[in-house]
Image (cartoon, rainbow, N blue to C red; front, side, top):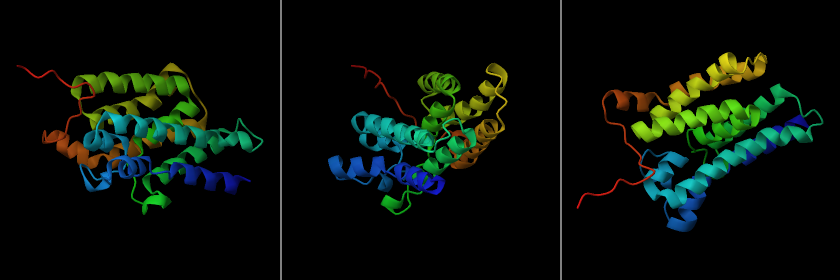
Length: 204
C-alpha cells in the first residue's frame, strides 16, 4: 500500500501545471522563456496573472493532496509518512514524468506540503512572504527568507518536537537556499528580476 501511495504522490506532484496551461491556452512552453522553470513564478513573469494564479493554486493543491494520501494508509497520524509523501510530490514537481523531467523549483508545492503538515506555521511563513514580496518585489528573496522562517516558527512559536517534521522543515530551508544559488548571485549583483503582482500606475 505504501509503495502505491508513494507512486501516486509522485504522479500527482508531476502534473506540469505551468507547461500544460501555457501550451493549452497560450501556445507557449514557459520553459523556453524567462528563467526556464515550469513554475508559478516564471508563469507570472512570462504569461501574467491570468495564467500565474491558476498555476500557483494548482501547484499548492497537488502537494497538499499528496500529503493527505496518508488518509488512505490506515494510519492518518503517521507524520513520517506524511513528510515522505510531501517530499515525493515535490520531487515530482521538479522532475515531472509528464514533461520530460523538466519542472519548476518546487516552491509552491513546498507551500502545499507545509500547509498540510503544519497549517499555522505555513500561514505565518506565507504572510511573511507576502509582506516581503510587497516591499522588495523579489520572489526569490521572499521565498528564501520565508523558507528559513518556517522551522523557526515551529521551534520557537509552536514548540514542535516531532523529529520528522523538524528535520523536514530544516531540510527544506537548506534546499531552498541551494536551489536559489543563482538567484542569490543575481540579487547580490542587483540583476534579479522583480515581479509586480499589482501593476504600478504609469505617470501621465
